[in-house]
Image (cartoon, rainbow, N blue to C red; front, side):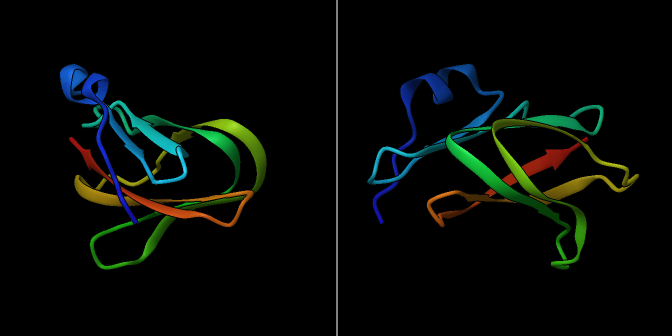
Length: 101
């Protein structure tokens, strides 16, 4: 799979935007996350979002979302790197890293 980072994502520096070779994108922002609240946006319908800690343990999971934008507030007090897994309606599973400060 070919992945490119857009110039806009590099210039802004406060979110993570990735395009795959089919032109599908997943945006997670802001990154780093300062108040345990962040958003996930795609140009596909989101089916499920899971947030994992560095041990691979889920700290958040939401299914049957059926929208393109989701606001998430994590209840964890832990800080550090987390993985956001986004499953879209076409079956694509994207993994994005976020930093909770």
